[in-house]
Image (cartoon, rainbow, N blue to C red; front, side):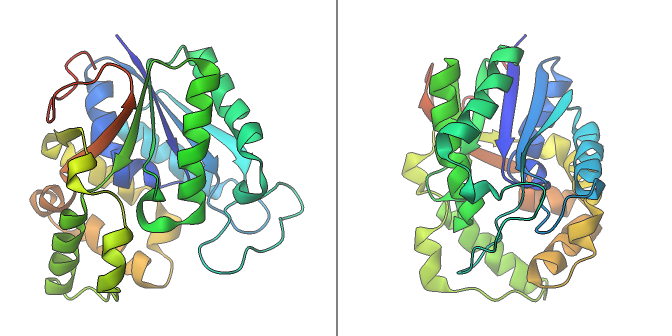
Length: 258
């Protein structure tokens, strides 16, 4: 059996990008650990978001949840001052954050670390920082394999079309799509996780704070938890990774030893 550590920026990222893969690994008897850099809170810390993360992780079958102790850095031009009780993730040095993550990797004797692609998916500053911290932590801990969660850009285009067909309020810049996530040619692993669509949807529903928020992301999340599981599986039933180093497998190989 293997130990997989999934490193994420905020609570709910663990579901959206890797939830099916984590549920599948846990169902297969492997140890699964989720590490989040931030608690998803911009102001002073409170337990709500991390409680939601633990509930979500429970749905997925995750064995342990770790918070590295950072605050959300926010998405936009302005990087706000740190809250009084902890630094924002973007203000932590890459080496300091990597050492915190490496300590978990070493304690768990992790076989695989999951991080993010170089674009941080859609470009959130915390996601980009996850990319750099994961790579450094894997080096420090000597973790054998590092895979970076991503989505092919052509899939993003199709998702946007489906969201618009469902009449979910969603504005986007078509020109920006060419800089998001990864080109399909860069992807090494594509996993069909539709069998775990209902589990993944239930885990997403545990994140009440973003579901009850305002704005387009909250509207999209509410729509995702309300659609029938087969539709959810159609939208989020496949997950993609790029293997950075380790034992490379052929494209589409479902990592049978996991």
